Image (cartoon, rainbow, N blue to C red; front, side, top):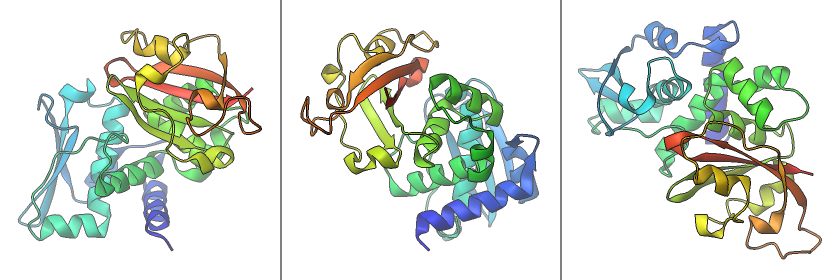
Length: 266
């Protein structure tokens, strides 16, 4: 079993133990596992932080970064810190004196340890079987929004799970003002990997994503979906070649968090 498979299996087991209605409550998971936690104002220093003192663990969660103690992004950050606790090799490192560090959750970090905690969080809040049962056959921006509300999860985490579980043929990208932060694909497009353009200057000027990144205070789906091609997003694809699929592009503006691009077959 790979480490990713181990993480997914553990997270889904924990989710099964704490599932209520259509969601997992991270507060309930923490309390049931002997963790204490608090929500506070820590400016822009971290999303969350797991600290170990005398073999007792406490989770600090930053309201300044997420707006409230029950927002979807806060829930993901809490689940991320739970990942640091439930994953043995993370917890043991803290128990043996490795200093606590503030996390930036929701797939914002490229560090392996942070990616593992994000993977745990996504599987805890969006368990595979429950997400597959709830999802409609056609996954687009509106469906991602619906599922995010149903599961109480961030739009980014929901979109990534839909792609990785092959619920539909999808490419999803996360953008900030600094450029593309990540790219995840369903099986159909996975061979291209994380090789999409990274610079905002490479975006087609009239694309939905370009407009969303230039209208950072909008939270609406850019409508209607616009036609595009795979080569417009992946420099390794030759325009007009057999691999240059025709796609539809949608984008959801995430305010100060950037934008979420959804690409799907035409």
